[in-house]
Length: 592
Image 1: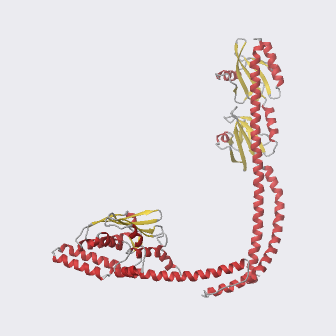
Image 2: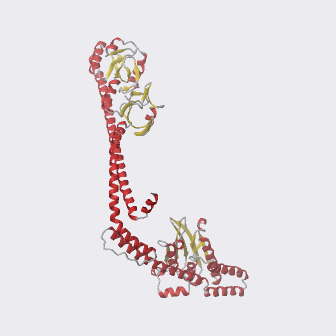
Image 3: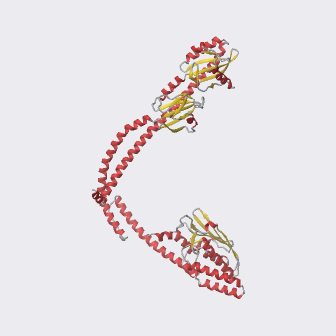
């Protein structure tokens, strides 16, 4: 069986069948997975949006609740004048207000200075004795200098149970009293739970200290212990301290989305907890549908793969035969087909590619020949008989004038130049090697012309070991002496600097010679047969240096010239600056 599979796998039609089968089945599987994920995300997003809307409704309902209580207190404050300082009329008025709002309030009462009360509730009308737990409520009412409504922390009242009290100061019957309204939190919780109406969405309200005002009902993940919200071993205060409005928490191994909002009037924190239990149930029902879809995709994959493999087998075999001929070294192959489909376009593209390969090979051969010519010219320039003759003549003159101390340095400089150009001839050298060669050359020319050429350098130490083309700088210095300073008939400075600019190494050589006009500068990097012949006879020209850089590194590297008449010339050479330091020539030699 294994041998049969391996034998079949060697055939392109069988492999195409497998590719198409995997592609179609994989596409269908991916589409199913993406659809499943999309539906899941849409349901989750929809339910989270619903939760946010419920959170807004809950906050709006709390605002409405607050306004109703505030209006109740305002109504009682305005009615106090009609009571005419009569405590019995006041109690009757409180009873009416309590009876009208008994659904949302557990009691409406006046706290007297001795902490006894006038209550509107049937119970507090009788049991109105002073109780010390009313003192914080009384003090809170008068702590607000502007007489605004104050809201207590949640607490357990003697008559109202777990409640929150709204208080407001009121002067009545010549006595400072406090109007107080106890909220019916059970009724508020039932109303808000009715607004939520979802098994996997729980609503809760906490104050800023983490005390539970309304607790989540029917939640398996959250619990309330001593009126503190607990999830696992953690306290609800951690949820308040979280700076995000929507965040995720892992509670008892389940990931719960928590949304919170701070009510600006009461400073209560309203929470909505979404555990996604209904979403999981919905997704589980969808799994059967997607399994059936995958089985259908399997059948379609087999049929489609067989059809595609049969349809493209013939043109593929034809292309393979032609490509095999190219592999054997025949670059003059032409596929040539009358097909107008993708295979015809592929054949046309392949023919075009072969034509370009043939053209590129020819260009590479021409470039290599030109590069070798330039390298040979560099070598010839180093053994230029005129340079040797003039240098030896200069040494003879130094001896004749008795300046024996300059003989050895001149001979050492000459040997160093010859060794640098001949003994160790290669494509590249470091900036430091090029700098040493330039210094030797300037030293010889200074003695030869008995003229001081002041050499200045500004090269950071970290750039000294960076590779550049060998013999790229000395010909430019030579041009500066012969053209800028009229062949040594005038003195001047030659400045050599180097710097890094992004991914380039820039080397600049400046002189203070006679300079050039813009027209002369434009002609410098152009070539002609007469100019090329002259350069070969004399010395390396700027054009040849520019071409060497282009041949080794390609665009955008090379040489640029800036000059002004009677102000000097600046020549800038640009080389690549990167970690590999690999040139185009290096890559070509490394390719098989």
